[in-house]
Image (cartoon, rainbow, N blue to C red):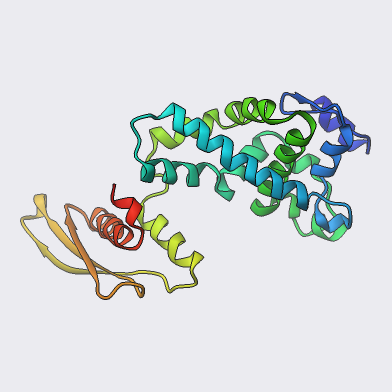
Length: 234
């Protein structure tokens, strides 16, 4: 068990986390305190950390990928700051064992919930900003996100077009897309599938074809996204 975990387990105030030493240990303790514990809690720090995270990740991508278009940078940033990515980093750093939860929330498995873990990680960034300013935030984010960034580049389809289209529609309270195979041609060893993607926000279905149904659905979803989000056309 790490030193910070031991301190947290004993109810004391840790002064170090993830490679950053806090001058004000109370800020780290507050960042680890979920609202189920009452007040004060980490919600305001989470708000601040979310802004810091967006700024620093955007800056890292801008300088790290000079050949990427605005649309490509936006998609990569969205993936890196997603709740799933943040929760994965939080788990690797042992936050489930450190987060301070109310008895009911802990009993109900709150220490494993994606939104809670992501929120705590953002709150810790907010605490680092208040304690040490922008530069240590840059250093910690570059270090913590090195692995996820490499995976995002190496596995561009981990969050494919169908998933992005679904998330786009869900965020706007719209029905999920409907995919339908409208045609198939060619011999068995070289089949071509045509798929129609129907989205309530578009006037009509969007079609695409490919050598597999899955790939045709992804292409149709990409075309639908390009119609819904103009910057994705770049």
